[in-house]
Image (cartoon, rainbow, N blue to C red; front, side):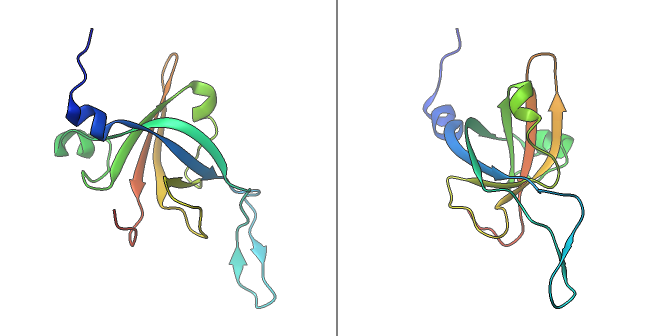
Length: 123
């Protein structure tokens, strides 16, 4: 049996994760000729968001230690995410997501979601 420490409880916490996916891979064109993508209404999912323990671990997944996070999900939940998904963690949805998906790694019975904070979003 694993003993949970105060540090683990503080860093690994269940949060409400909000996400929105593109409605289409084809861009829409505004009246001014600008291309843009439309997204679904944000959905909610409760998940355990964990920071990386070391710079070596973060580098192995291709993210920064400060902005990278990992989330363990079921295979079904993991299939909801792709590189275009907008993600907000304990924040209200805005036009642009707070995090982006770096990688979705499926395993036998679970899925590891690697996300990184977008530039311009401070913790």
